[in-house]
Image 1 (cartoon, rainbow, N blue to C red):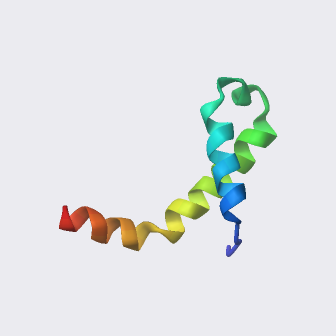
Image 2 (cartoon, rainbow, N blue to C red):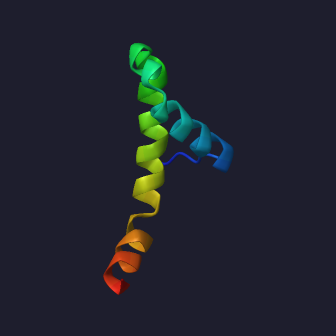
Length: 54
């Protein structure tokens, strides 16, 4: 599963997840979670390196 999201899409997903009303819209919530999961997965190695150096 390789999808690319723009920075704008990632920021929008984060904003959606911050709004409590989003929970009512399962499709929006699911899409936002998919985008954020992709971001986290694609940065996992770099985040682990940063954490180990702190």
